[in-house]
Length: 374
Image (cartoon, rainbow, N blue to C red; front, side, top):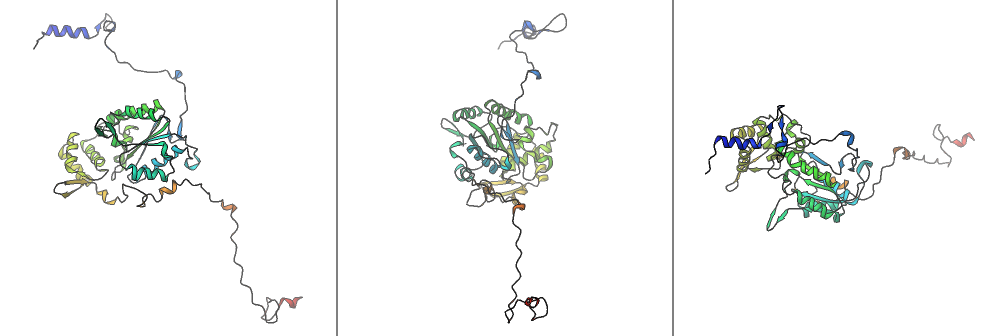
């Protein structure tokens, strides 16, 4: 092991640090190999304005990242399928909001099966299936793994270039593709999503992501992943440990019951103390159940009892019932304006029975006739 004196260490540091000039500033000319940080800016007068290229006017734009967030069971995935189908055939948007530019669509869906849910929904929506491409996993040699936005974004860009004419990429839900990103930390979420937005702008592709609110939270506690990442509504940075533990539990259990062991290990990895986690479980009313000797204990939110919408939605179980009506590709027949409708006919009074003498009845006493006035 080599030992250096204080003088040698100071001399080495002196060669790396900027030298002071006579005016008290730094003489950066003496360190040409040291990269200095600087701000990148442009004068506003040099920036040429350009219009936003909308895929769906006022809602989804090419080159931008759009998020659909809502409670589980609200139909977010159904809506994304309808949007994909409309883009694939260049169909009309609802409410006379124009026509979609026809293009190819890439779908990443981590919650629904492609053959029993996604494709049947696309068929019901009247999609051009030749323009829809469904990504299921990443293949690397003999290994098959889940797509990861942090490590596999270059593969997505490669697929977009390979397919060509891609107008829309749907990621449902985006939380399943965030890898090890802690969705409770704004900086980590932004770091994972900013490259995705940059790719969308570079390739002029619309990115549509789906994210869930928690099932039992209310108010500010129901902020979705994109609410934090894209709009940054929570900028305090000083959330208490209890709040972090509660938000962790809401998101961890939002998709259904999880193993208690898994929940404890994940919380420990995020630096949440066991006592803080226990208090958060009590406050949220998290239900602990033992499901078997091998499975052990599980945690679930109390709102789990109220969820009746099945995850594996398909045509046979009726879960598509009202949504399929919106996907009907048949022509729409509007109801005529009420002013064009004919007046409701009034029922005619029953005819008076003829008199015995064959003359028309009169308005006077029985037996009189209009013939009497002739």
